[in-house]
Amino acid sequence: MKQVAPILVSLNTNEAHRPRSKKIKAVIAEDDNFTMGNLRDCPFDLCFQWEEKVIYVELKDFTGDYDLQSDYVASIVNTNGHLYQQILEGRELQDPIIIVVLGDDADVAQAITRIVLLRGLKGQEVVDKIAEYTSMVENFEANCIALNIQVWRLKVNPWKRMILNIQKILQGGDLTAFRPRPVIRERQAVGLSILPKLPLF
Image 1 (spheres, rainbow, N blue to C red):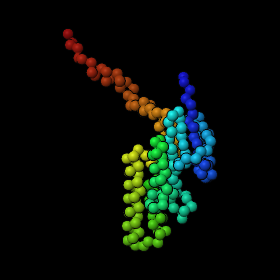
Image 2: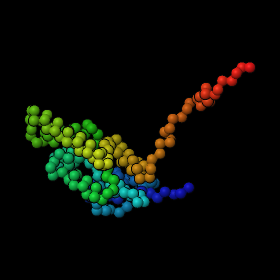
Image 3: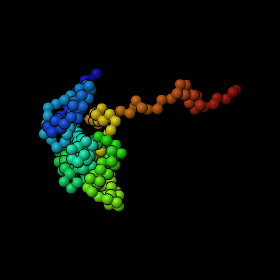
Image 4: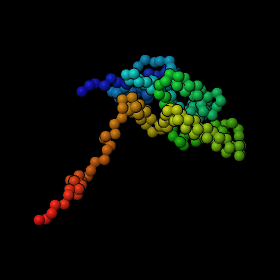
């Protein structure tokens, strides 16, 4: 059986200094399908390479230092957000881009509310601005999907799920393990039911 080369994982130099990089390295170390490479300077937090295929991953969390706001939401609703520029650079590289949001729908909604409240709005202004920002995030994600940029919201066990998804994208998926299986003796019963009835004499 041909041995498959591991997927090379490279961290952006800025990402390597963040606390979550230790968790990423730990998950990579436990999985023989991956190996850590050297730091690299690229527009995204992570780069996965297998043979000629490359995938870039941008991580967005909810623990940023910017007024305790979500890095993800702030990158979309703020006019100086750098996520658009990152995606533009990534599309110029012509390799797949995946945005991994380290949270779920509830985290995104709370982050939007937090941003609005920190801006000192009151009453109906709060309601209107939350609706506006929610629409911006939803439209951003829809446009990403339309441009073949995947957006994953991963809260529970995000690192293991992330690398599993990446592995399947790079090395190919296989759904045969999930094909329906007949119950015991069902195949025989079906076979007998479609046999032509023979005359009794």
